[in-house]
Length: 460
Ligand SMILES: Cc1ncc(COP(=O)(O)O)c(C=O)c1O
Image (cartoon, rainbow, N blue to C red; front, top):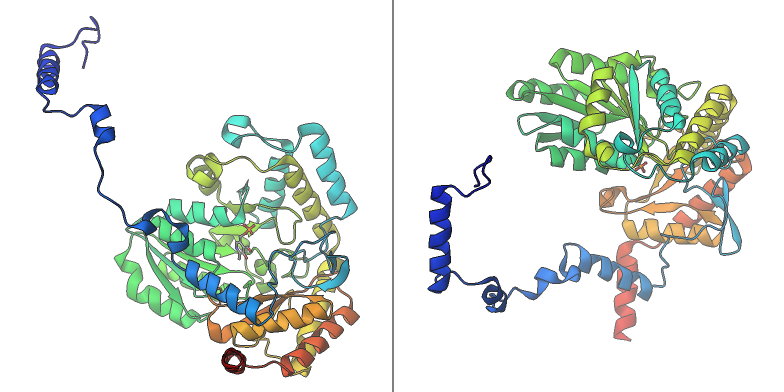
């Protein structure tokens, strides 16, 4: 608007300014004060009312119904000590099947000591994004350790596993691209796909013929294509035929991302994950994703892959660039946990034995464990959300802490209890929990019966 050298208004701008002032004087342009005072059209009440958000009424209805039939919420229980194979809730000790700590490394002396040493030296926070606040040695130690696990060129860690998936998928794909994932994929992948604006397609659980068919029909209509599968599926405890997924992605010219959040520490003889379990070369997967919250006694997400991918992520993914770096004690703890995992494959072997014990025992008792392959995660499917919630409550009364997974997290017909089994559970704890589950499941009323007796009680 001003002449750069003289700092004066140009002739044209001066004329425009005079015309504006003249119009303002004549009352043609309302002043800011007049605009503030003028009445605005009324908005409907729900525009500012949080209780009108989608799903809010259903949540309240479910809570009221649960209260009427005396069902206590199993969620947000307060644990008074480290929640491992056992936990303390309200002065009572429970056998715990609701924590991921697969190899029992949360609270391991070496892991806690690493966190304490990092606090002593660096405090508890990185205090800004690593781009500006810089790195701490534990960030790079952890990243190098994880990159090695996948024979990858590089790795990057971020403060949240969920945000890692959302951020990277949302960034590397755009509206001309295609993303294809298994129907049971984690929410963070779906949210990342939505953010990217790419065309989204899902294929039935582990049905690789369907994946192949989908790509044959649609791949050529898109610029880039990303296939996403989980290593160990977090709701069902099974895994895809990774060698075949790789063959499909190579044939169709797609990227492959494996979210092995639950496979690390669990799959493969040494717990390296699904690539070790299935004997594939990890370099044939374009993007390895995992979390620090399952086996590595921390919190956060990581990506491992080519140097170009990681370089790009570190300057373009908002969840890294515009978010604080991983807290130093968390990075140090997860790095220490990784060292223990690599040094003590016995833990992985114990976990495998425990997972198999659970599955065999559940099958012997006639429980429906779906497609679980008996490694660390086993559902017990009861097929109705209310039944799953009631079964969880009955087991809590018997000293077993296990969470129900309800609709909409899974389809109603697949509502379940989900057991996380760890290396620290004893055979007795597992056998007792399974026997209690079978006994209580046998005596459960159906949702229809509960509703019928509820209606009758209202009529009395
Ligand atoms: C398969 C999978 N991916 C990603 C995440 C997100 O990880 P985080 O809980 O560390 O944010 C989870 C969390 O449970 C998960 O199960």
